[in-house]
Figure 1 (cartoon, rainbow, N blue to C red):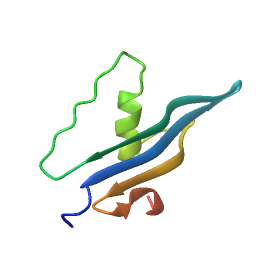
Figure 2 (figure 1 turned 90 degrees about the horizontal axis):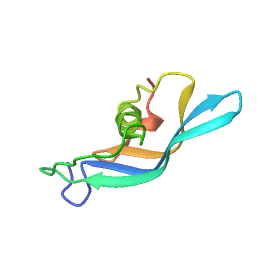
Figure 3 (figure 1 turned 90 degrees about the vertical axis):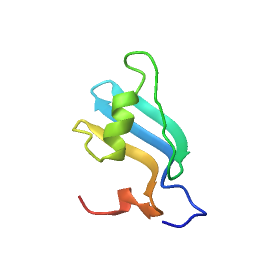
Length: 84
């Protein structure tokens, strides 16, 4: 890991769920980074997108959900550019 970049960086993450009435934007424009040795606590009300954020980072969002945009970088590598 390079000392000049975060261990995990999420940039403008968008995770949407397609419905008959149009997309539901569960996560819409989330950005944060975590440096090596840091801990991040994510808190919020039920339905605020905490679990969807975690599932998005691990690329485990089930259909009809989809990552609609953004970048997820782990040690500088774009996870969304990798094959499943």
